[in-house]
Image 1 (tube, protein in one colour):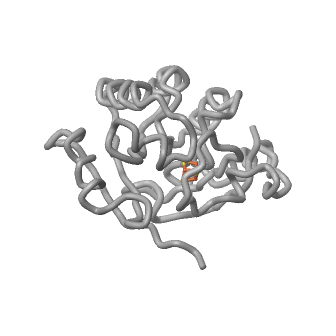
Image 2 (cartoon, helix red, strand yellow):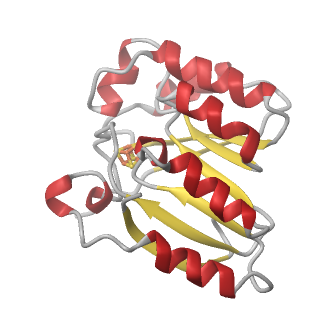
Length: 194
Ligand code: SF4
């Protein structure tokens, strides 16, 4: 597992829990408003943090932390994400995954071992999706991830980050049509650097 950053304790990344956050390196999207280019573009990658060191820390803090968040980058890009989730869970932690929802096959294998999923919905389905993500995206895969998450019986949320330069607010508002009334959905405006 390629880990580009590790936050030992966070109150804001896992609703209701004190959690450590593992930032994986690598993403298959190129969103223009991305706040974590150091986790997306290989030329900006810092030296990886070893999973053994992270695991050792988590093992020591079992009584002080409630959960662990895997985010990125895009964690489902990691070949050994399932093994990492299982190892963290074996320590007794609740596990949350933050994902862009582009890899439903990987997600399907992970879901039985997760406690919470936060999935980005980047744009209204259709042509806009690929434009916002900066790569060609099959939005069928995004919708499949949504269905898998809904059927998994765990806590989840869908969320959208947008910036009016790239997606007008009225277009962003169309995304909510894909969200059920009972579902947790957050939409927020990106703050661009510089
Ligand atoms: S999916 Fe997330 S990490 Fe990847 S480029 Fe987009 S904003 Fe950045």
